[in-house]
Image 1 (cartoon, rainbow, N blue to C red):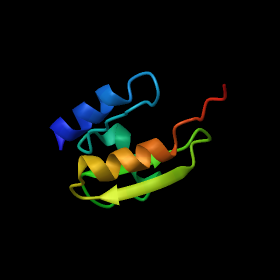
Image 2 (tube, rainbow, N blue to C red; image 1 turned 30 degrees about the vertical axis):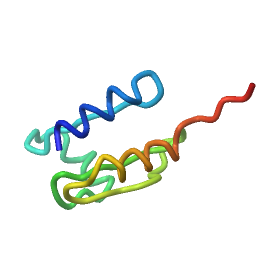
Image 3 (cartoon, rainbow, N blue to C red; image 1 turned 90 degrees about the vertical axis):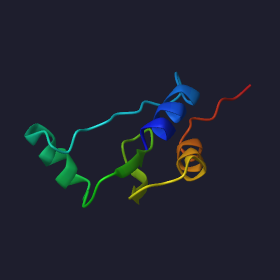
Length: 78
């Protein structure tokens, strides 16, 4: 999954923030529980108001994650 996430992080640089949590770090446990993370890998896409827009468990394709990330991108008006 790392190559897919790395690629998406580069693709969306400056538009969205990608945050990676190590499930083995005790300090991350509260955050994991607050989002109902029940397996690894887990991908959570938050909107601009920090509401869960999409949540995926297990391996995902770049297409699936890209679609979820694109859905929360702020729109720009001309």
